[in-house]
Length: 277
Ligand SMILES: Cc1cc2nc3c(=O)[nH]c(=O)nc-3n(C[C@H](O)[C@H](O)[C@H](O)COP(=O)(O)OP(=O)(O)OC[C@H]3O[C@@H](n4cnc5c(N)ncnc54)[C@H](O)[C@@H]3O)c2cc1C
Image (cartoon, rainbow, N blue to C red; front, side):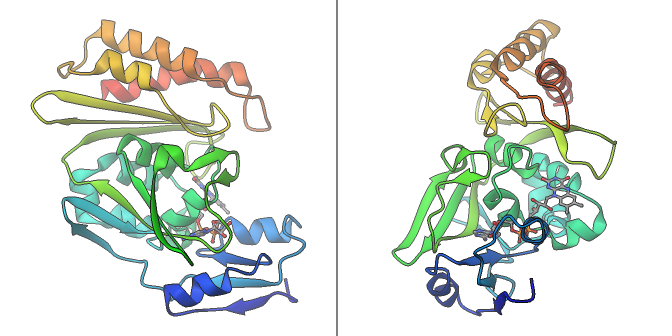
């Protein structure tokens, strides 16, 4: 990596201007990117644009939303009292990302921009109906998280654009995040599952799962079965939702797991996660 230049802009405009160059890449915590560069995945890269000095590290309330800066680390997300109080599913998902060293460096923006179908905060943000706030040279645009990903490692982000923040409707939710990895801790997900529920006169449910398709999937058919159901959920509804989750999953086999195991576990995890609500 010695022939790669390094820039550390202090304004978003400066960062976006630098990133207009096709051969420059944004870097946040570097926990994904440095590994990929070392593995030769970006041979044409001429410079890294470090987002670490930009004002992207706050979590604040604004107009009925919680705005989470893309530069917030997993440790910051985990310890934030508002995230804990309103979005327990996100606290739980961030808690499963790597060991302490990774949590202290890895950002939520990097987890999303990396666009891995196994990224742990992705299903959590799906279940909270988060919106991705993107900034580029033409200004800002907002994309619902379930429209952000276009394939494994791919998203709607264009050259020169960065994720500035995530905007989440500020409502009290209950949530659960479960993940299966090779080990109980510090492992990339073979499959992960996030469920959230909130009440605005009736109960609403969101179910999303990762590593079971080219992008994280929202399981809308299961949500329809759950809509309005009271808690705790009955065994019959749990079974129905689990069955739907299993049939919705269309996973591949890879080095981490077989497709058939992942499909079966989609049902098991959906049931377990919903049961804890
Ligand atoms: C040992 C180890 C264990 C891990 N365990 C887990 C795990 O359990 N769960 C999990 O989900 N992940 C895991 N990861 C992957 C990684 O830590 C996360 O995906 C992390 O959140 C990436 O964030 P980062 O800030 O390090 O991103 P970086 O590596 O800096 O960047 C990742 C990608 O996102 C782009 N990018 C970063 N920030 C922005 C932004 N604001 N706007 C636009 N593009 C941006 C970069 O250009 C790059 O393409 C692990 C990695 C390692 C090395």
